[in-house]
Amino acid sequence: MSRVGRIRIGVIVAAVLVLEAACRSGLIDRFSLVPPSIMAGTAVAILWAGTYTADMLTTLTTVVIAAVLSVVCGFALGALLWAWPRLHRAADPFLASYYAVPSFIFYPLFIVMFGLNRWPLVAVAFIFSFVAMAIATADGFHSVRPILRRAARSMRLSQFDTIRTVMLPAAAPYFFTGVKLAVAYAFIGVIAGEFIQSGTGLGYRIAFAYQSFETATMYGLMLILVVGVVLVNSGLWAIERRMRARVPA
Amino acid sequence: MPPLSALSVTRIYPGAAGRPPLHALGPIDLELQQGEFFSVVGPSGCGKSSLLDLLAGMEAPSAGTVTFEGKPVAGVVPEGVGIVFQEDASFPWLTVFDNVAFGLRRAKMSPAEVTARVEDALRLIGLTGFAQAYPAQLSGGMRQRVCIARTLVMRPRLIMLDEPFGALDQQTRLLMGDELLRLWRETGATIMLITHSLDEATLLSDRVGVMSARPGRFIDLIETGWPRDRDSRMASDPAFGAITARIWSQLRDQSIQAMRATT
Image 1 (cartoon, each protein chain N blue to C red):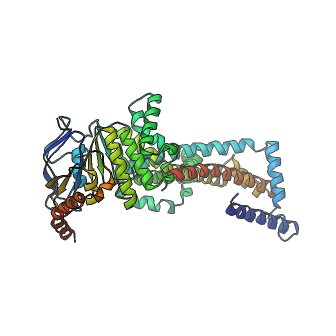
Image 2: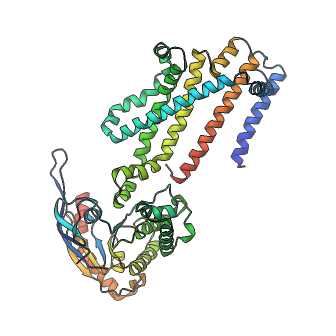
Image 3: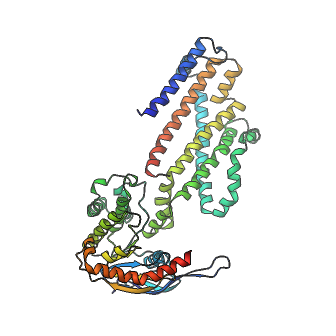
């Protein structure tokens, strides 16, 4: 393991130990925070008992639906922005300020539109994440060095083949960054939506445990969520790093 | 039949927003001989690269005609013509092997033949040990050799090179020049090289075309008279200095004119 890696793990271990000591010694009262060892124990117990497995699967499938929709629609919009520079210039101020608007204000509207089920969550997660994918896609296409397109022309590639065999692989690392962001934003969108208003899902369960003063359950669920998201993101990050090593930005 | 001929080829760019049209190039008349090594030198901005684009079919001329092996070239690079660019055009997501195999696979060649031809090309350019490396792991000179191999593997009858060694240091340039001469002898292809280096043009070529400042035209065509079996050591031949001096005497005024036009 590299020195940086050791430092990174050292910082995490130290923080967990300090927290454990602070909780055990009574410096932090148990009502506010349970010791990390109990969080981990509760998380394992929850997973073992399967009490919240259905909620976890609901959340996960909602995230997957929202992320897939965001990636597909975001890619299409990004490609359109690239292929139509005038549209890109016209849309630029909106794209730049898009994330200044808190998308969650539209959540009640989506509930009115779709009812209290999975689809308002998908909708709020989608509007939160697809623009990140669109921007990454347009940036990716723009990042392809013109010489690669010239090389494609010199090899008599058709427009379609140039896009398929040169543009797409050349811009792939950017697209993947978009996918990574879309997945992260879809998670945020779905969990936050479940927090605000929902009858199922991990976010709802965490909020419910909080309101019922089930502190250990709340932290156990939070830990499961954090570990799950970190694992998904680390996997995506590792793939992205391998891609970037080949096609430097 | 000459492999490539150009008749009154001209390039005029339409003026943008009320500005007059820009006469960039021509009229150019040129005939390349079969198996000839022809170089083009000229002052900066005289349209050397535009000339390559027009002759290779990357662009259509505003006037005049280009023919390759007797057939008109009209805005599409003809089969049998290979181009090597100044900039690194290797595909970074593919290994050296896959880069070189790119055109062959598109031509639906059998895997066995692809392997045989790629290995052949890699041996020819001295990259056998790097078949599985990615371009990012190679030096600039090696990446350029990958591009040359990617062109050679298609067995072009005419190879056009646009300042292929422009980004390399002087020593690497000389060695790459020697390699190019060796490839030229081994493949029997006709070569047209665009360069801004007078030494390079003199050393490598059978014939050097000297271009004027914009609009670029040929103001001199110089036969070097070198034997086919030659390398960079020709630099010590007394004729080398004489030829380079003749090119420079033609080019000096043109370069001053080009510099005044851009400053």
